[in-house]
Length: 91
Image (cartoon, rainbow, N blue to C red):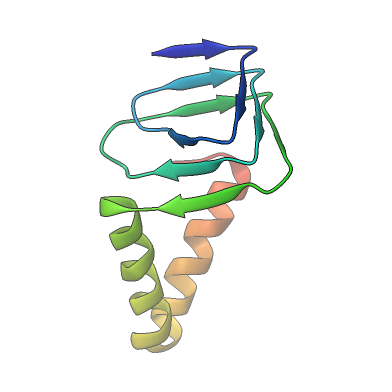
């Protein structure tokens, strides 16, 4: 579903499968589960935003943490390169 220029206040917003353009979020719990792609563009996050990663998204963070801390220098380099690619906009 596509949301454009909408205000979300005091609710839980599931990102999965949705596109948000120019939306404003206030006092929301914003959840990404990684069951479907999502897109955020020109959105504003104000006043008490709680970000949550659940399901496969949380498992991905757990896996990256395990690589970083459990595989020595090679694991740290892999995770750092991943974040460098994110910063450059690469997949």
